[in-house]
Image (cartoon, rainbow, N blue to C red; front, side, top):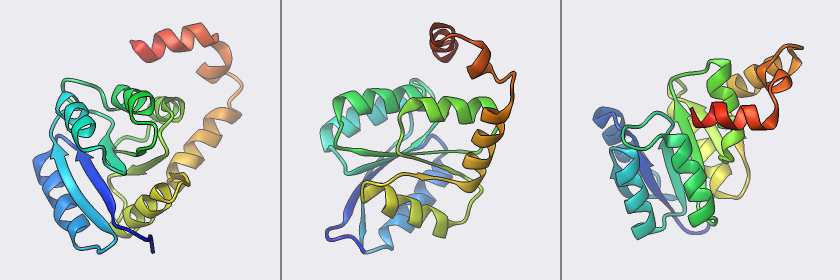
Length: 162
């Protein structure tokens, strides 16, 4: 268990999920929910104001994409740990997440005990990428015609920005 409660901000646009996560997080003595934002712009502003220890970020957000938000947080709040989540696990999303610099990734379909482990590991300075994430990443790295092997770094950068 961590020494002091991890101050967590949730950036999630689905109200029911965000509310459930907030209630669930509040039940753990080593976690403190400091706020919730329903879109990327609100998440950016709230994070700058609160400077949480960890931000739980949905990768698909209105107003400001979750992965772009992660990139901004890495520059502006480098001490803050970032854990991303999504319901999608297609190879392109996994590739985008892997390129973002986030400290972890969990699928929304996983059980709450996995999220607890992920939050604790990421908050302690480690990384946590779900087994599905790792499996998909290894599969696409093994493909001889994978887009990261046939596109130049510049082409990949343009693709990420699109």
